[in-house]
Image (cartoon, rainbow, N blue to C red; front, side, top):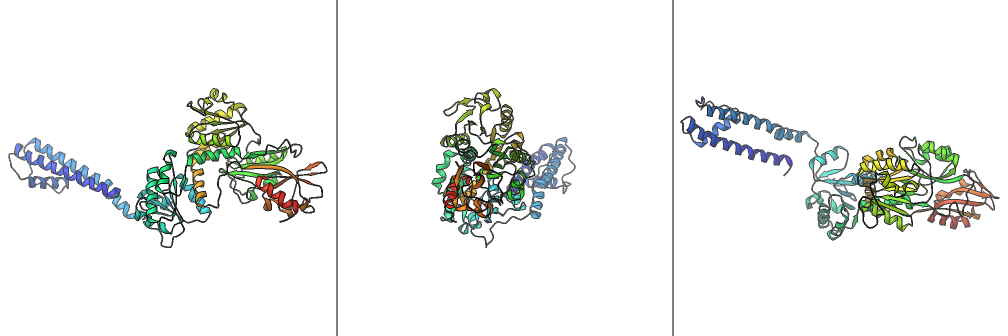
Length: 548
């Protein structure tokens, strides 16, 4: 029974009760004050005539004041109930008649699609990812108004109950590639149980809100359970654990005034919305992009077709003057890549995941929380400068704010940035719409819960796409490449073949860093190459022998 039907039933019950009540009072009043005995049916007829304003002349006039007052009250009651019926019953009925009709079944030719029950903010990110991969999807929404809004916004949606067999069949679940249950924990387990009844072989992915209830998702038969908050913690930690080899600056000297640095692209930069190829960063600034973070995903090297947005963090190599030029393009401060202590603020599920990941990667960290418990080093408020000072924030390299309150996070960013202007600030956001405010407050890198969990859902469904990776390491190595002697860098196409970037060439004791596509490699040249462990190994194997 939908909302309009329930309201109608309630109205009819109330109206009937009021009329029968007035009929009893009118019957009694006619005998007591008018001296005229009438039947109850006659009294009910007078009440109906009064409520519907069709007249009450058969009993008029009344000689007693009491009966006249009763009739007046009945008149007013009838008018109020009639006018109430218009907005409560009649208007919604007309609105429903002329409103958008939401489909209740999927198209008959829909197959190999993803069924999403229901659409949350992380589900919106999932839909964007599926669209980018050309994967068909269908949202199953039990609320009519919500389904209508989604339908009018252009989503592929049907109005059906995901906890019912009929709803799953309406979504053509047996023909689907996957089902995503994204509601509360009890509803998600119910959805999975229903899905397994309709199509046992279709893969199910369930989102768990309370980690302590994860076991019950598995017992319901789900094939994959995702915990958004732990995923967010991993994403925040990956920004710290993804790093440059510790050899840099010690065993490897690239050249005088040549540095590796991070530059976050901020709102207002003309790079926002452009691909790396369109940005002309290499031509305009002279730097080499050896890696980049895109919404929690580290890529090395990034694709030329990757789109830059505010929040993208570039990992680049170049001279001081080149970095300054890029700084102007990104409208952000240059962050020298260096190691040091990381302060983690917040020790809930997200903060604990961050701390565990940092410890596993060997990153020194100090944990701060409001509550004293095992694993917390400093007890205090993240908005209190004195409490933050006890963590050593003024000398720390990075601060990770894992606070579940966006307003407090924004304030803490302002306080920490004031205490340490050069610190790298990484923050979590509960709501996607607050991400921009955190950047404006001074954060270098912000991940929203919806973005991370939505992309991880996509990664789980699209198994070929790795969305977030921990502990990726960018190495800078020196190596001879006899297989490239006589080749130009353009001809060698090192980046496409190995995933590495040649950032410098040591020739006769002089390090050359201004390398163009026409630069030709000579006998005895030692190449300085940046890339992931896997990429540098591939470069050594392939380029050392000159094989393809």
